[in-house]
Image 1 (cartoon, rainbow, N blue to C red):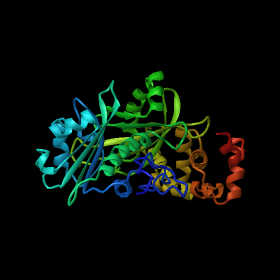
Image 2: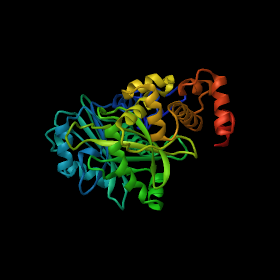
Image 3: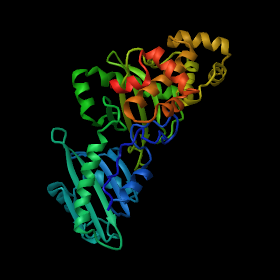
Image 4: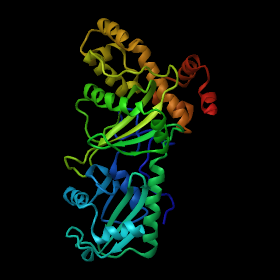
Length: 374
């Protein structure tokens, strides 16, 4: 059996940053593709149906599922509406692990399985939240070793979920009603010290998305730079709904503090043409879009667009593209060991030399020195 556990976290890898949508150069808060996660999971533990989530003990909701495969939305929703209150689930809550034949669980949706396994792991006693994993198997029972592996895999998911590749970054899951389902320890501390962060996030996040990405689909990764509690942050996010239920949609966000002068922060804007152009740049920075291309995306002439954009954002379109490219490069230098030449290419620079000279002139250090200083 392989020793590398599957992770719900992904982000930029050593080999590259091919993300779920490619829209932000593949920089993803965590793996937005359930198939990739479950393919890795099957290398460790067989299953025919699986579900994993972080549930509130007193009132579990469908948007607290992180991923599901094989169980239909009606089954997943029913478990939440019943509060995971069958004897089978109560045993998992008490002991951390429960295993039973499908026809012994008293659950009509589990009777067709040879064996069902449920694991539970406390996340927060204060908030009454626990990690849950439910696996079912046809044709045979889980071995004793596989039962032990299941508990370890759930703990591995819990640990890896909080590990952002950027050394200083927050991870947050928002429910369909904007309540906090989960925040990693770094972000919890930040929000305790700066409670205005969450207030500003809720005030800006959805309006900016509605302006820039009105046709956003589930599992498409997008990003923005906004001010939270007076500090600049780069937000990378996607929306998901593993259950397909109306109240099963959640948002996964990663919050990265921006360094001074790194990328202009722009919230809601009066002129939606500027909003469209910002979305266009963030989706296409890796190919260095020209002024004419960006103006065309905003449906305005290049001359007029240059003036409008500079007034609204504070820098010219060309400067914004370059600062976006450098921001991505800084992130990759901090969070990966990719060669500098590969980072230059992925960030949208025409050559290693052009990237190095631009980076040094703007940041004050060479890319290599910047990486070593982090």
